Image 1 (cartoon, rainbow, N blue to C red):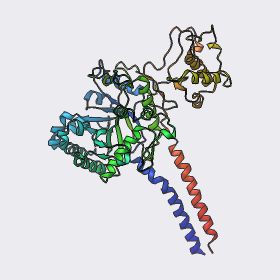
Image 2 (image 1 turned 60 degrees about the vertical axis):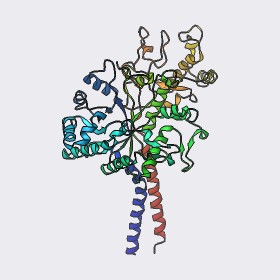
Image 3 (image 1 turned 60 degrees about the horizontal axis):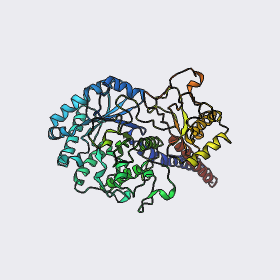
Image 4 (image 1 turned 90 degrees about the vertical axis):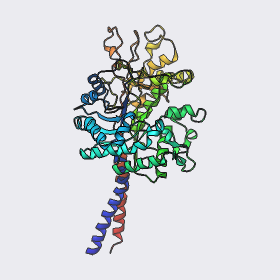
Length: 519
């Protein structure tokens, strides 16, 4: 009897451990980067009257931006970042590759001057060696991995190699035949260098840095790649892109681009390197040849990207791994050469006012300047009048919104159009329902904003000015900082816990059932 009891106990322990590990293993793989997925920003400096380093850091802190990528190792900015919680990727400019790739001494001096001199007061997390070297200056390709190895050796000598990763941002064009992702492969003329790079990244547990732009995929494949797929817009199943070889369904272009890199790495027998998206974004303005470079599309892409990262949904191939991403870019670089779009990728103008207001509902601390929790519900752009009218009728009817102010002669009657009237009605309903996220939908024709839509004598229901109608100026709580709140937390962990608990219960139930069979 004692042996039976012992067998039962051992079996129960095995069952519980097995059930637990089946969920812990993907989690371990997903946590190789040692932190939750995040969204950072790139800082280009071709900006008129760029903020001073001290003001720049204060602005980043105001925006709750925690990850920054520099295209160099600017000493003044690195000093200003000291004793903040902002994590920074510094870069070796392409024109310094020759010197560093040819001399270990030069590499060691670079690390001493640009890394060791600031770390750990300044939280340097990675060194980006060059930028799109393989495609922009292929003649320097043979120097790339030697430069990376030399810098890594210098980090080892300074005992910083476990804290600071080394990699190189690559253009999406190193991948050929990218869709469907399962048939993608690296450009064979670069495969020798890429193979060396991947072996290094695997050995040092460093990320594969990729600059991925669905905007350019859309522009280069007009009529083939739908705009909605490029912007992360919700799709009906019939509009999802399907990989015929894997039957994986892709609802957006970025996921397909990421998986095409994973498949390309797998073709070189590398399966343990995680992708970091070092650049992605959408321009807010373009010339006649770029009609889709608009504020609305830039807003939609970046807002949906941010939500996509923090939803931790991964990709169809690797749902357990969500790539972090750096938005391109923080400021419009107005000194850039044509085309027009080159100067219009920023979230903000150089004077730190927002180019547009990101629409990300929820709570959190990324680009979250809405310290008063002032949010409003307004009509979305691009909705046809008939659909908007239907939503307006519902809000003022069954929804019981207070629509008295949009009646003829009242303060919000002008401008007399369906969209403006709908915005007022939507906000009335949203405020009445306690600002619940689900109360600002109206079947997809409404959106949440932190910018006060009040105008003139028309004061919206959610406005602070309702209690102070003598105010002569519309207060825009987002003017200084660009306005968006985002949910950092996710239910991913909760789902794991619930599922894991369920399987443990099944395991214990099995054990108890088995015990009945014991003598």
